[in-house]
Length: 458
Image (tube, rainbow, N blue to C red; front, side, top):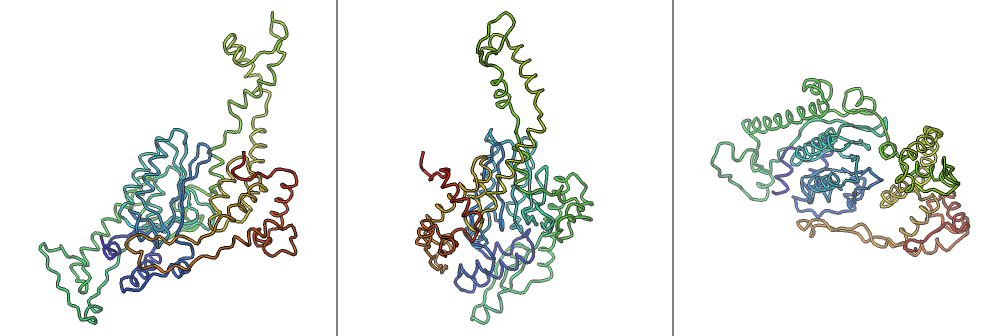
C-alpha cells in the first residue's frame, strides 16, 4: 500500500494532527527531502521514541504513545508513534505472564489509522475478564487512542487538563490533476466495476464518489460509536448525544460525559494495584520474633522454627499467626509504609526527567529500593555513556530521504563535571545536575556515607 493510499484511507485521529501529517507527506510526495531535525521541531518531540513496557511487581505499564499505525512503517518513524501490531504482541505476552496481574495502558495519543484499531481494542476488551486492565490518559487519549483505551475496565485521566474524546473518523481526497497538468502528465484511470476507482487522485472528486466515501466513513463511525457503547456499558444513543460529536473533553468534562471514571496519576495507579504492604512473608517475620524461647505446655523452653510448628502443630501455628496479626495495627502499617514509599518515589521523580532519562528515572523510582542520591549517580553514569545523537534509521523506503545532523558529544563535559567538587566555579558540574543543587548535595552526601554503588559492581 502506497503512502497516498494510507493517507486517503479512514483515520481516527484529531483533525489538526491529521492535517500536520498530510502536510509532511505532501512535501515528501513533491520530492522534498525529509529533514528530521525540522520535523522534530514541528512535532515538538524526538522521532526516535523508545516506548518499552515497564514492570513494577505484578503491574505492567504498556505505553501506547503517538500516532498509531497498524504496522511499523514510515508513519511511525516520522510521527514518533506506535505500531498496533507490536502493541498487540506485547499485550499478548503480558497476558501469558502469570506474574502480571494488572496491565495499565499508558495512553498519550491523538489517534491514528482505523486499520488495526478495532482488532487491538477487541483483544483488550476480551482480556479484561482474565486480568485487571486499566487505561490512563497521560495526557491525551483521542480518537483511535480512546477507541483502544475505552476497552479497559477502568479509565482515568492524570490531571484536570488531560484531553479525551475526538470520537469520529476523517479522511481527505487529494486531487493531483492540476499538478500533473503542470508537469505535462495526463493519467487515464481504466477500471471495471462502477466503484473500483472511487477516490483516485487523478481528477476532481465527483459527487457520486463523494457519496461512496462518505457512506464508508459513516459506517466506520457507527462501528466506533457502538464499540464505545459496549465497552462503557451504555447505549449507543448516549454515546452519540454525550460523547461522539468529534470534540475533545478536558478534565472534569470527560468525567461528566462518561468517557472516563476519574482522576489518578500513573504512579498512584501503580502503587494502588501493587500495594501488598502487609503480606504473608511479613506475617512470618512477626512470628519469627515470637518463636524463640517459646514455652509450650509440657515442653521445655526451646527454639522452635516455622517448619517444626507447621509439621507438628499446625493448629498452634495458626493461633500464633492470628494473635500476631491481631496485635498489629494493619492500617497503620500500611499507611506508614505507603507514606515512606511515596516520599522515596517523589524524591527520585524530582530528578530531571528530560529526554531518554524519563524511562530510567521511572524504573528507579518504582524499584522499591533506590534512593535519590543513588538515582542521581546512575543518571550521571548513563549520561556519560551517551555519545551519539538520536538514531536516524527510518524505514528502508525512506532511508535515502533523510538529512540528519550529527549529535553533540558532551562526554568531556560529563567527565569534567563528575571529577569536580566546586559547585559555584564549575559550569559543567552545574550543567550535569541541571542546576539542581539539592541533587548535587544528595550525591555528595551519599558518596561521603559510602552509599554509592557503581553499576556493574557486585
